Picture 1: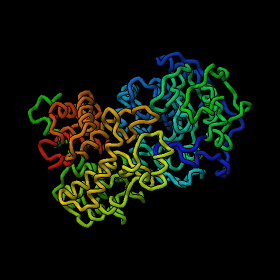
Picture 2: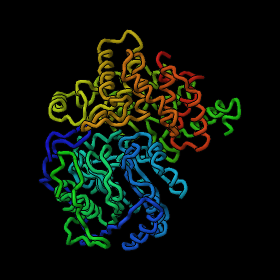
Picture 3: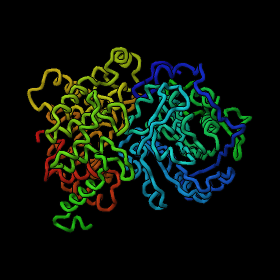
Picture 4: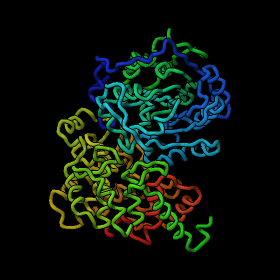
Length: 320
Length: 306
């Protein structure tokens, strides 16, 4: 990774250094992981059935549990594919209810826009959530609790995190598959920056940038378990993401019971080498699987695109 | 909607919303962000105090009590660091003309606090090597969180608070600090006007402004000499407010447009309709709604001169 990228809105010099020393003291990497790449051509009601059938491959045990869906809602810019599409969010919520979850809540703390209600309205998510009786929690303004981090890459030691997040039994990261000009990619791991509350860390959550975006992603992943991933890879973003990139279709929804395996698979679908993405490479040492031999593909096989996703120049080295 | 049908509908609504705010006060004082929470937070507490205009000292006592020894305020009860909303807390106390000692300490904190880009190694780095975000690090404001860069909202509240605290005959150091903050705001504006969090141009691409940040920045820039950026921003805000249906953003738009003597009656009516059609559960939004609905009848607390 290049030196000299922005600490103001990007990652720090320490980001540029490889993760030389392990800074975790536990391992929860499963023996094997499962991923399902599902073909999807449009954001429509058909996604409900697609997700239901896809989730049945995993049989998620959510009976009697509180499920928290964490979509990627950053900002609203007309015509820009920034956010997880509302249809995917609602289809996921309906599926988990059918699997027996007692409560499904959608929760997010946008990193740019302070008016979360505006993002919900403008994207159409507010209307869809209302129609389906699905509650939403603004994690930027939720009650917060100080939590000790379970890895120490950022040096932060503790983070204040929302109570709604901490009280959920089953956390589903639902990223919009995008390139990111400071982190390389926004996938299920980077998506979790949205749980860090703006009430404490501001808009944007600049402390995480100063402490190293890659490092903070790893610390968060170690501390806040992601139980499942539903990645919106139907219409994605390439180039100067996460806000100012251009649309790029993959026509896929990616499901996984391992967030590392999900991000590895999405990175490959984007034409990137996942082992070159620092936070994926590091979390693969103790949180999930990167090796194709340990990742069982339940639906389509991983196929790299003919042309990899465009990136800003500093991340061209990600291309496989 | 009934609020529009009845002549005193808006006034009755303001009274009702004030009752709701009063009822949501925490037993220990202060207000949380959401009704279900028991954690006092600084922003809803300040906005609610401004909206309620209590005539007794008691409700404001929590603000004085929660000030940290360094003069800043934490974002919420339990936090052990001062936050970028210290300017808003100072502005609130100033509004009531109370707690002079606490305000002096807050001024001292604001004078000592600055974005990290003001420190020379970072200043040099941002000017010479780290230039993907277009900004001039010599023009610095205030950060959200200690040890990070300056951003538009905390800078705007700090500038507003210092201007209000020293309405005339400003000490030279205060005047200079206000000026640097003002220059930072102009520097971080989006090229076609308006502000977002503080990234006007990234990787050569102009970024989109946000309504609330633009409104708060414009309020901070009242009394500044006329400028093209402020004029563009005001025009942009005016246009956005016409179609905005999000109460938080609409309320801030009203307060800013009122601060610049623009007509806000129609916007106020729409805000009243929004507040009536859907219960506002976020207390900060509820409070800013009251302030926006009431800004003509009572004084707009963010308006200069009062």
